[in-house]
Length: 209
Ligand code: GLN
Image 1 (cartoon, rainbow, N blue to C red):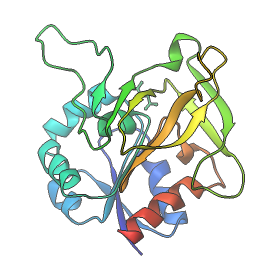
Image 2 (tube, rainbow, N blue to C red):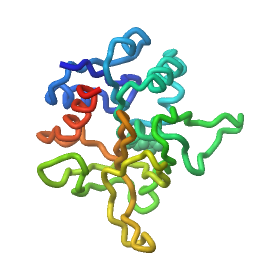
Image 3 (tube, rainbow, N blue to C red):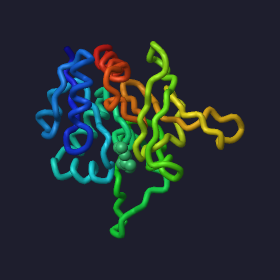
């Protein structure tokens, strides 16, 4: 069984641990650098990316995690985790000090927009086709979710939400992406009991790595 960690500073940690265990992984919470060093892959859960950035500093995990991502560790980010794995945040509010509130790791060559759907609705659920996941659409739960606004040429789009307001026949709002062993979803598959397909997809990436 591959050993997969869940970054356990805040957010939906327990749900990811349970979903990973059901998907054939040995799942462990990661709060310390030694725990990070012991995993084959890492899940960055939902939560609040500003708080997560701050806690990564407090727990002395920011730099070790950045380094493991540079070294090619497989990673899966959901929601705030997607924001942390991104290359940049669009129109980010900056605190008065001038330091960015969110410091993304740049493991995915994408620009994300935080709380992007929230201008219309805070939270919603829908069924999505997910490239690489067989067995029909995936039920997707969105909570103050980001979307992906720009993707680099090495990034594969795995899922998008149809958008009537999108122009020029655009596929819709991108909500799942992959680049090498790193992937991310705007939504929360860990909240859908009885369907571990997205977590199994990640476990497979870790195994193949
Ligand atoms: N809105 C949060 C952020 O910007 C993400 C929400 C979530 O993870 N459910 O970090």
